[in-house]
Image 1 (cartoon, rainbow, N blue to C red):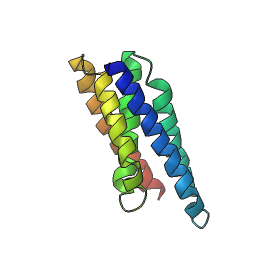
Image 2: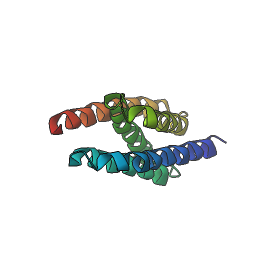
Image 3: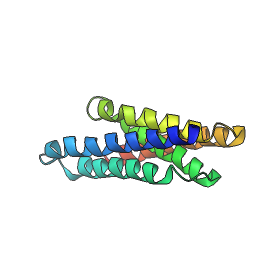
Image 4: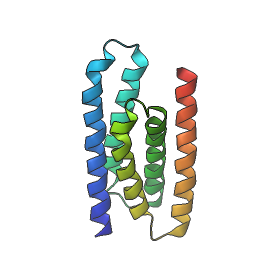
Length: 130
């Protein structure tokens, strides 16, 4: 049951990420290119998460935590624009990664650390580019 719930949550999150790309791509035409690149990155994060969510290997689960952390940076730093639209995807990914690593405390602990590290690195990258 937990396996199917994690997969369903990851698919819902991917749909939200791709929908955000479609909704905000019209606005991006008037802006400089980095918002468009960020939109593509958000969609790729969502599609990657959905593609990897059915694999139950420790390394893949840790990668899912990292993808969720990268999406957290977009959610927090884009809070006044796109963040509100991708926040549900972030919550779906967080729950999916948590469900997949729930049985192994070590994987859960490492996953949370990777999640935080990925959020910090993605946020630092965004600040450096902007």
